[in-house]
Image (cartoon, rainbow, N blue to C red; front, side, top):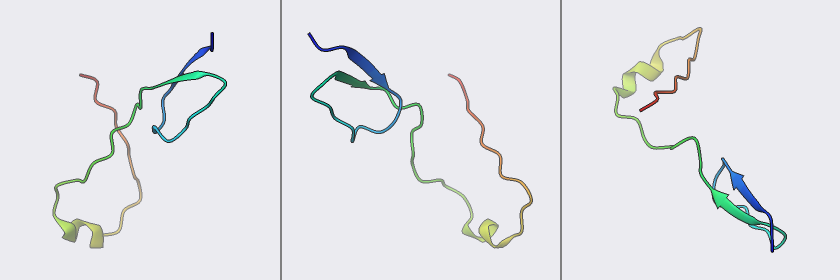
Length: 52
């Protein structure tokens, strides 16, 4: 019986030594916003997690 490991990253990791359950914490998808906002200068970049 192989140990079970929960991975919080992408599904591209496999192993013959353990059973891997993939549960990524981050869902990457395109943003819908005005492309001209990228031309501005920013001092901070803030990532926020919204819990449902």
